[in-house]
Amino acid sequence: MVDSEQSYLRDVQYRFPDRLKARSILHNRYGRDDWFEWLSSNIPLLSSGVIADVGCGAGSFWTNAPQSVPSNLRLRLLDISEGMVDAARTSIGAMQRWHDVEVSVADAVALPLADASADTTIAIHMLYHLADPASGLKEMSRVTREGGAVAVVLNPAGTMAELSALARAPFGDEPDPRPEPLSSEQELALMRASSPALMSSGTRTNCA
Image 1: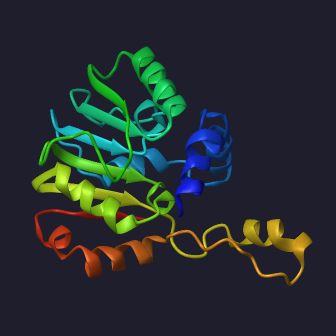
Image 2: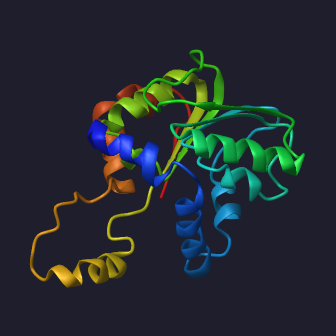
């Protein structure tokens, strides 16, 4: 993704949470109904741990987290959109469940966090927005302590193929100029090829 596309995401597409909320409604209606339970069970969320959520959006992971997730986590939520950050701060604050929360506007390739300051760093459905996903992975590794976890959540290849075909139907056989979004399979290969240290410096988790 080039800088102009990233600016579009920050200033137009995800300037405010409404459009992301509309997508979430579709997933909630037609996807698995235990998504947040499944996701939280596959990400290390240790009691009193520091969790860096990169690309946190409106904070939906934390407003929907099941009660099995420890409430004493120290949350460091980051997103490139100021509108998303404001929404996350408001919605999470209203819950009064999480008591150590810092929400910041930040670029995923230049996180305002110290080296090895997080026990777990997560990136849920956002890595494909980066112009250089490898740089994002490197930065997430930097802020995660040795033995901690970096959990990246992406869809597998071919997800929502039927919906994409419907969207392309009016254009006939004209090729789609948009590249396919980064898949979970590609992300795992990227981790292995470009970030060998990421794969070998403690527990690292990849979720589809």
